[in-house]
Picture (cartoon, helix red, strand yellow):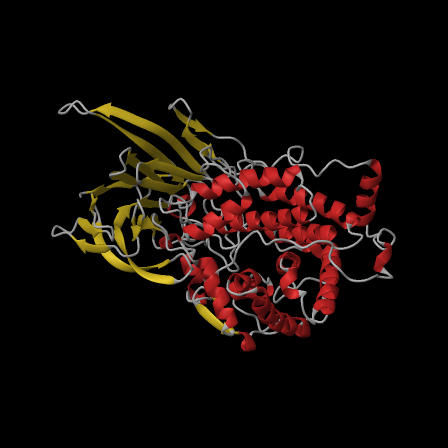
Length: 604
């Protein structure tokens, strides 16, 4: 079944899985944005609709009389922080430095004015003020307030007033301004208890006005979501904020409808973006509850559809797979976020927009990327990962992707960012060391995979010698990323036994135009191994023995090509680089096509 780009230029993703009856399904539905009728802003009276319209048109001074003659600056409620921070990072802040992805940045050396740019991860952490949750987790209110006020004072000194327009660098992007405003409102007790109260409240009001004017200039849809979240939170917690809240709720729901596919997966296809969207809505919901108001039904409904796709990318130990620039985010961090969302659900099974196939077989979890990469306008750390897979057994990751592109600039060197987004950084086949989809700068991607075929079915049979029945799940998918350059389509078949002890695979290269051309091309099928696995080549050179940290032993066998072990890198749960090994099956193949079978089996 082919999944071409639709007329709007957005890639439909594949739906595949098993029905409740146990019969195989292969259903493909056209991609679409969430229907706004399903996730609409709260019902308004005619007068409220008029207020929202007038606010959106810029008639704000007439709607908020106190804007010209402000009364006493204050917030209307105290928000209880719903997402606990990282105690280790908070302890580092108390010791005088920011700590992110293993990198320490002394507070005194931080560039708050944005003249000299911080690395992207540190820029989001410092200017987005997400560190407020960390310092609160590591200290009493008085202690955390002292640290927070020191950093906040330096930031306010460096940023006395907002610029007229968002900047491409530094603190004044819509993304960071929205996240910062929401953080200030959620953590207000920590930053408003001392001598900075007046300056901070003035800055909060200025941020809200700046976002009113600039939210539509957000760098991408997630940035706009952050901006709208800040606007709605300010509308809730600042005096005379009803017009702003009505205006913000409409923009928020509209942006969610454009950001999220109909199965709840964000169009960035990134677990990090998925987590950020959930976190924004969780914090915004806390602002509603601070005023004893229920969040709009649309926000609660959106949380309910955002969580299952995220859970679909968790392994047996609860940590995330390394997809689209993400890293193996720890199970604790994922669990805290899901608990704060209030959503109790199972991993997504009906895959359309999200595009990741998930198979569970007792202790084994298989994740398979069976969709085109995200479009450039949705990608933040877009990766050429089509037809890559990850496999875990119990708490051990056997086969992984490198991950960590979005953490580059921490202990992962920034110069490796593009390499970690390449096809070779994922467990799949690579032709001529070229990416299946072009990897561009600034997290964007170019031409390549535009069409994916996917078929999923269950297999069952009986062993003649023992009479025992057996079962397995079979995934077959192909992509056209190499068709234009090499005239070959990559097709991959994965068969995971129901007891989780064996994964059979086959990688096929098929002439894309029905007839192969002359010549040969280099290929490499890469299997990046999990951390802590001791690997050794077999005597015949066609296999690799794998001793896992849990004491089990697995064997990899290849049906052709030259098998080698090479060094690789994997980003751990904190986005830090860990040296690992990779199995590489490589050689030359005729442009007329060919196939390579392989087996990964548990021996003890």
